[in-house]
Length: 129
Length: 129
DNA sequence: CGCTTATTTGAAGGTGTCTACAACTATCGG
DNA sequence: CCGATAGTTGTAGACACCTTCAAATAAGCG
Image (cartoon, rainbow over all chains, first blue to last red; front, side, top):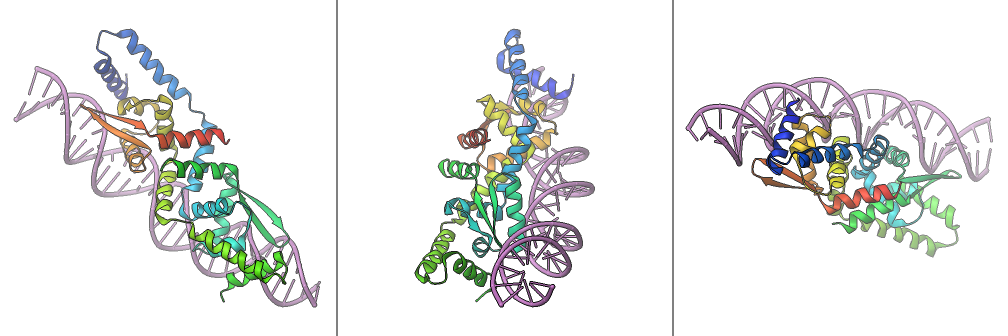
């Protein structure tokens, strides 16, 4: 038996009392179940979303688009953040990949809009502070 | 006038029509207001939260703690993820800093529990997929 | 006390990320 | 077509991050 499993065993005996072997097995099963609940695809998708938002530039862009409650042209967005055009473009592209904004071509202008997922996330952040 | 401001001016004239000078000024004011809505402290706090969750190991830890709906001992958590004890400890510490989990000492064991902010975020992610 | 065990801390190294620059594509107006 | 403008893409280097190992701290037990 591995060392970490030993430690877990000791912990559970400590917590439950040594006599309750049924409870101990039940607890081990619970922990197994817990692990089983993790879906790899959901994880990687959520992590992509969160790490996209977890960057100051991209967070600002999303905030602005959500507050605007409308699509904005790149040329409207760029003056509002303190990085190069190129950085804005890279950032928006990553946000599109993450499903946090959508892109629309309009002649020579490109317009971006926050998705409902983006505004839902910001709403929760605002509401749980 | 800067280049990006020139571009913005051209865009707005393009969109609104050149005659509507009042509307143009109003739009510029709107964009200014938008920028003013960004609060630096909120931004850095949210970005810290999001970047903490935007890492696979930490995301898994939070998921597990939220699903458990209870505090878990480090020794229960470690076998559920595929990194060293040390990595788990570092990860949990960052999550505490970000306000996503809380820590409690119980004798020689340390127990962690997800905060309501953490479960709110996961709920929104689940609900907006 | 001294030993064992649980967890944390510090540091290092390998990897990934972010932004700016430059070059590119695409669209518009003449 | 051609020049100008809007925006994107590739890339490089500076920097940050993540994990591991080793050592440190802390608590319980004899």
